[in-house]
Structure formats: C-alpha cells, structure tokens
Amino acid sequence: MTTDASAKPAPRASSLPVKPRIYSGIQPTGRPHLGNDLGAIRNYVAMQDKYEAIYCIVDYHALTHVHDPELLRRQTLEMAAALIALGLDPKRCTVFVQSDRPEVTELCWLFNTVTPVGWLQRTPTYKEKRANQPDDVNHGLLTYPVLQAADIALPKASLVPVGKDQAAHLELSREIVRAFNARYGETFPEPQAVYTEAPVVLGTDGVKKMSKSIGNTIEVLAEPDVIRRQIMSMVTDTERIKRSDPGRPQVCNVCQMHRHFGPDYEAIWDGERTATTGCVDTKKLLAERIIAHYAPAREKYTELMADLPKLRAILDEGAERIRPIAEATMTEVRERMGLR
Ligand code: AMP
Ligand code: TRP
Figure 1 (cartoon, rainbow, N blue to C red):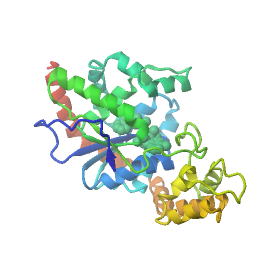
Figure 2 (figure 1 turned 135 degrees about the vertical axis):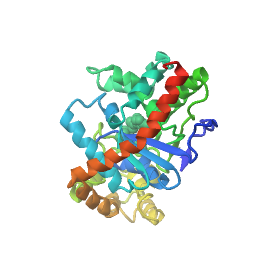
Figure 3 (figure 1 turned 90 degrees about the vertical axis):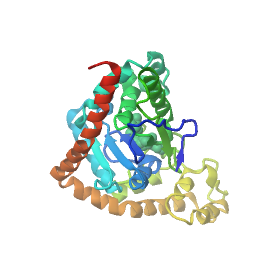
Figure 4 (figure 1 turned 180 degrees about the vertical axis):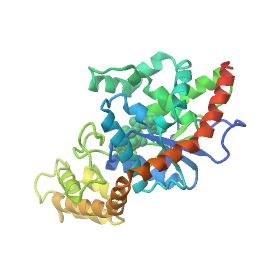
C-alpha cells in the first residue's frame, strides 16, 4: 500500500474525526473488472479494519454519461452486491449510494464557488471525456472533479484508496479543499491517494488501461467460460512469435497478472523465459487461477442479487449512518461561509 508522496499531511483541526477516516467512490458500472479489484477494491477491503471506512457508489457521477434510468438503477445494485461479495463487510465499514445523501450536491455547489474554471478545463480526464462523447459535453463533465472533492470532504476523509488514473482528480480535490480552507479557515483535511501494488492494470489488449468503456476487461464475477474467453484473448509478449522463442515476462501482461494469483509466479516466469511453457499454457493457468480465486465471491454475489430488498436495506442503513456526519459538516460549512 503506498500513499501519494506529493500530498501534504492532513492539517490538524479540532473538528476532524479521531480515527483516520477513509473514503472512496466507485461508479455504478455493474460488475467490476480485474482493474477495479486489483487497483482499488483490494485496498478497500484491506483498509476497512484499520480505519473508519466509507465506500460510495457514485450514481450522480455516472449521470454524466449514463442516461438510461433502469440501467443506472440496476448497475448501482450490481456494484453494491459486487463490493460486498468481494469482501466489504457492512458491519465493519459503511457502503452507501451517493444520491441517498444529497447533501453532497450542496457541498459541490459551495466548492464550485472556490474553484477557478481554468483548473477544471485543464483536467486531463475532462479533455478525454470531451473527446469520447463529443455529442454530450454536459456541464457535469466539467464539474465532475468538484463533486468528487465534495464526496471526500463531506465526511472529512483524509485517505482515498483509488487506482493511479485518479491521481489528477485527487490533486484537484486537494487544491479545492486548500482553496476553501484558505478562504474560510481550516475545515477539511487535504486528502491523499492510497495505491495498491497494481495501481494501473492493463486491459486484455496489453496496451491500454483496463476499462469497461474500452471493452478490454476481465470481468472477475462473470461465468467461468466468459473469464476463460477474455483471458485467452489477451495479448502477450508481441515479440514472442514462435513457441520456441524465449518469452519476456517483464513486458507480458499475462505474466504480470500472475503476480497477484499465486506465490509461484517467478517459476511461471522462468518457464516463459526458457520457452519451456508457451503463452497459451500461461494464459490457461491464469484463467483457472482467477476463476478459482473469485469463485466464493461469485457465489456470494449471486446470493445478494437474489434478495434485492435485503441489499437495498444494507444501502439504506449505510446512508443513514452518514447522515449525522453530513449534517455536521454542512452546518459548519454554512456557518463559515455566511449562509446563516
Ligand atoms: P471506476 O470504475 O472508474 O469508478 O473505477 C473504480 C476504481 O477502480 C477507481 O479507484 C479506479 O482508479 C480503479 N481502476 C479502474 N480501472 C483501473 C485499472 N485499469 N487499473 C487500476 N485501477 C483501476
Ligand atoms: N472519479 C472516480 C472514478 O471514476 C469515482 C469517484 C467519485 C471517486 N468520487 C470519488 C473516487 C471520491 C474516490 C473518491 O473512478
């Protein structure tokens, strides 16, 4: 687990939580992929005991690109079930849906007033999103990082487990909080990103970041045959043409993934280097290991999705637990800003 070295330590303020509070948000993209799990969710699970942990399914953020109400509702529940199946325990951490605590939209508006528009226009993800959805450059895309800063600041979280692709957003969150603190007095800690051992997981193409929108994912909770098909389609070492050519595990995405699914990955790498094993063998082994690793989670996921009222109740309870925290922050912020 590593933290972002560029971040300053959180300021001490009397109104900060005693046990360090962590927060992370994840978009309701349905069932998570391997990049989500290795890059972020593993840390959510590891951090739930040491910290007061809050995890949120960010459906307001999703509205910047999902415009099908039924799909959004279904994928929100799917992501909630998946997080619990992968190891979040609602007794030890809080899991809630962003729109169940609408105070965050008020904080987002207040943060808009301390955020220069140039910061948002320069954000790399904004430029990417504009390019990806040229017919739908809605204002939410520009304000997206302000809402993210508000998410983190509402519970005054100081640590944020995320993948490396969120580094620029976290930097912006710190700047927004700093701008608020400078204008209205120390109110919020400056949040730091926390990364796993796999902060950037490449997709099956072996080149781009694994992402649902690119379609290069390995869906960890899918049926075994789907996982097999996705892994067998992976691009390996492109310079290993013949079976007898030695492989280069350091540049092979399949070999890199083996690191996370067994202590013997060095032996697997040796097999590749000496051409004792071929890429197909290495992929088949990876597929079987990933299927076995996620089998209990897959079963738990199916169970949770079979009882949606129970799942909804867990999320309702999560939102209720956040209520006093959100209300206390908003009362303080309104007072500091002169709203009452
Ligand atoms: P998203 O689906 O974009 O909401 O991502 C949820 C979490 O997974 C965020 O913390 C991301 O940084 C992380 N994540 C998504 N894709 C990857 C990837 N390919 N490698 C590492 N982390 C990722
Ligand atoms: N922007 C994040 C992503 O795309 C999701 C997110 C929203 C988030 N709010 C957050 C992540 C707060 C961490 C903290 O993955």
